[in-house]
Length: 256
Ligand SMILES: NC(=O)c1ccc[n+]([C@@H]2O[C@H](COP(=O)([O-])OP(=O)(O)OC[C@H]3O[C@@H](n4cnc5c(N)ncnc54)[C@H](O)[C@@H]3O)[C@@H](O)[C@H]2O)c1
Image (cartoon, rainbow, N blue to C red; front, side):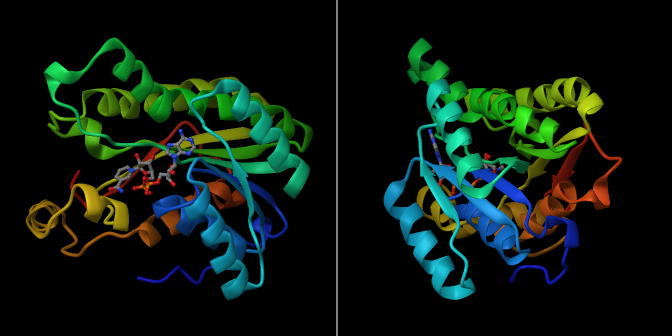
């Protein structure tokens, strides 16, 4: 599938920050916002992959996103990265909290440290990136924050207890931030992807049988890809969704 052709004029020249933009869905979003004419920065821990993405997009689109290397598990690093992003692309009006890591773990292998680490890579940074970006959005009279949750927390997936907990927590976080930031005209919404077949997912977790089983549950009988998240995220970022906040949008081909 290719990127949707729709243009959102209010995203032109707009400062956008995507976390985990170096691969998968985040990379598709970095490209999509660039193609809208936005000024795009992204944070990622995977330096080689991220720099390769910047080179590829610069060659293909004539525009280079700003890559900021940082570990989102470190709150001070988040604050520095958001400041660096704003210095590079100007005031941030859209934040996409996309980064995560869906490691599998057997129940008996979970420790206090591994549980905390999972919440720090899958939940905590969404709050701290939003906190760091809020003053920039306030100064511009508003903004849009998009939080990546997952339908995984509504399925019986026994091997991802901390990830599922984080993804459920993101719905609560979204509601709370939307209430706190609404008076500043900052909207906060969540997206819940279904099974999105990326290279990483195929390499680590998904075989043909798992993909076929999920398609059996979907209303739409096709594989979903990273590009399927682009239209919903552009819509939530743009003023087309100006009255929409505190919502959770499921993009799963009709599993739920
Ligand atoms: N792919 C799916 O099927 C699916 C389904 C539901 C929800 N989601 C959600 O969508 C989002 C994107 O998923 P994806 O499949 O594209 O994932 P991905 O693993 O391909 O991309 C995640 C990115 O985050 C980066 N990252 C991980 N830990 C980091 C850290 N500590 N600091 C900075 N960057 C870090 C990775 O390097 C990577 O580039 C995630 O929030 C995921 O939970 C994905």
